[in-house]
Image 1 (cartoon, rainbow, N blue to C red):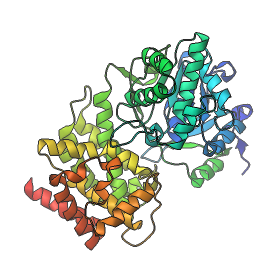
Image 2 (image 1 turned 180 degrees about the vertical axis):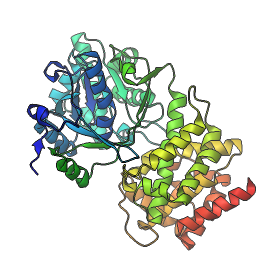
Image 3 (image 1 turned 60 degrees about the horizontal axis):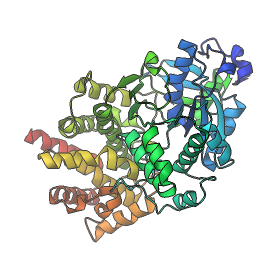
Image 4 (image 1 turned 90 degrees about the vertical axis):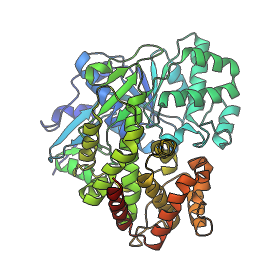
Length: 499
């Protein structure tokens, strides 16, 4: 079958079933510079912005994508070849598939090729917002202390070479230095990552770096730059070769489409430095305080992903929907949500938590969104200190249950030590701390608390006997019998007796 290459000139030749940009992209200016233009950004912020450009006729809020590393070259090259267009493939639980071409990205730059050009772009009067999806690890903080990690060699490079940075905070600081020198107002820095109080965290890390490099500039940033906290949500699995092939079978050649679920949510604190898009007109929600929403999402959705990801990986499941199709895993997840996560959540205005949890199970179980467990477990050392461990510590403070979460931590130790599922099949483990996690987990044979003594991840959890007593019992049981399903079933039966 002959396919049509996705680009601006071919839009009118695409199948009628494809939704296309309805605005004149040649008139759109990049009021937003976005760092980290991966799948989630393209299913979320770029999607909302595409909706906005189509519905309002505004031309000032297009997006210039930025990659900072050599690893970002591939997506940059593909986007340029496709005139920055890509297909958003929305997969519904009933099998319905919607193909939509997104046009809100209008440029792309690579920081490792030309850092000056990138900071000049951020510093231009046209840029009003610099937004980020750089993953939890990109914020360069010590998980145990939440303080900026100045020991990172790239940080040392950026402090000494402000005009040629490598890291995001070096780029932001240099761009803001240029704006200040030019007499321009500051841009807003908007995190779209799954970090609680992501705006506050971004502000804290940037000010720590800037204070070390240029205290006078840091004072200006503290006064002038706004960092709105936000809660973001849309399940966006990694694009597979099969997804690309399916699109080709429909007649369209797109080298890097994005797959997502139909659900999306974006809750943002309404505090911006220099204007903002009217995203509320296309489904985003602006609120005075995003805290209850982001806590709900991180402690239920993101933690729920990690629960299924680690337990399911050891069992031998491959995807999130495969876990949810297994009644044992679905029941275990719901009990974790009900018994441990919900009791330490504050009320969330406009949200029925019981309905929200049910919707999560339904979303996770979407058989057409194959979210691989290896992706879910990616960089767990950055995720679990934010997604799961606070639930453990808050429950211990209140005398609540910690059983369900403790088994996940024990499973993470086994996962990091053995690197295989219960059948001995190797797991695809990707984590910046993989070596440290493995060494600490392997040490559990001699010291049961070795894994927990990674204070950069667990803080002082190893010193809490309430937790360690439960954890050691579960660790011993798991190493004696790595059939995680039996451990889960035993816990559910014990919990039912107590209840």
